[in-house]
Amino acid sequence: MKKLNICLLFVMLAVQVVAQPANRQLNLQEVIALAQEQSAAIRQAQTSRENSYWQWRSFKSDYRPQLELKGTLPDYSRSIIPVTQPDGTTDFKAVTINNSELGLTLNQVIGATGGSIFVTSLMQRFDDFDRKLTRYNGNPAIIGLQQPLFAYNNLAWAKRIEPLRYEESQKQYLEEREKIAVKATELYFSLLLAQTNQSIAAKNRANNDTLYTIAEEKYKLGRLSKNDLLQLRLAVLNSDLAQAQAELDKQTAALALKTFIGLQDSTQLQLAVPESIPATHVTTATALAEAKKNRKESINFKRRMLEAESLVAKAKGDNGLNASLFATFGLTNQGGNFTDIYDQPENQQRARIGFSMPIVDWGRQRSIHKVAELNRQLVQYTVDQEETTFEQAVLTQVNQYNTLKTRIATTSEADAIAQERYTITKNTFVIGRISITDLNIALAEKDQARRAYIASLSEFWRAHYNLRQLTLFDFERQGPITTETESR
Image 1: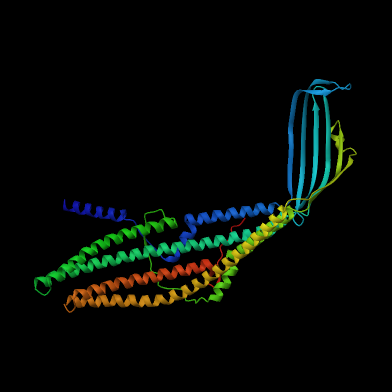
Image 2: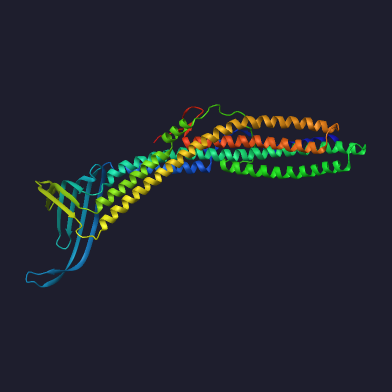
């Protein structure tokens, strides 16, 4: 029976060990890599980039030859229609007819002029079922030109604007990745601070319990006052509450981090304190130059100015003298058989110039053009202000980065000193050479110094990734931030 109980005990312990979730050790770079690979935020960024890519493909296809097949097969009609007789009277006749049409057109736009050239082949068939008559009409080949004159050329402006928009979307994707890194860093240090607080609370609970046990013995021997004993007991109770709250905060922070980086399992995360920091010193001149070169803002500013200028050109082109040229040259024929269309076809030409010009518009044209001009000035002023604000943000971030970097060494040394001082103070209190007030002060300073060190690391690494986001430049590797382009 004794052996059976021992076996059952081992089985229960094994089940408990298996049931406990495994710990997963992660550092800051690993958490950021997970967030940039599998988080919901990166999937949104990838989808947005994919959307921009297909918009770019759609734009490029507009400038390539378009082959189109159009037709009406069939257009059947059976009805009674009025027919004018030779003597001028009207008679109603029953007709059963069918009209079929099929055309193949190759069209190519001319970006420089805004026009297009096309080649068309057209075939028509007419069937009169009552009279058993079939006729064909067709154009074996027609070449034509459509060309607006003095009008706004949307094709030319789009060819200047859309490449900038696409390049801007690629930069936007890189910025979104760095934003994810910033958010992951914030959540990482939130959990790291919560784990630090939980560790501090657990150690304080154990230390206070030990000190209270020692204090009870001293009180029995008359070497400690009742007030000091009660103060230590109160410290034990407060440490119990602090430990429970710290555990709850740790669970909440862990859930937030795992949700963001896309971890769905029950693994307990154990985060490492990033002791090493980049040794590179960042200068404001380098950061500002790289930000202007790599960020989407410079492209965005240029694109917005081009769009404003295009609206001015549109206001000017659409409200003045507008004319269009349409010309075709080709072959045409008709006959009772399909092959008759290609038997000695005749020439067909057509040329047309249409125009419109306002004579009296009561200042409408001038007003529209003036509004467009003022909007362009407004965009210019807005862009200038945003450019200045952007430069200030970069300079501020560089100064913050360098300042926080030097602060880490100070808080690290203060943390080590506070930890050592508390150990000395606790040992001195045990032998009865200092008061409990001095012990509590050392305890508070120890905890405060540790939290200050973690907070300084958090602020530095957030500044580090914020600077990467603002410049799209990796100062550790001394190169622009890029990502592998998917093969198309």
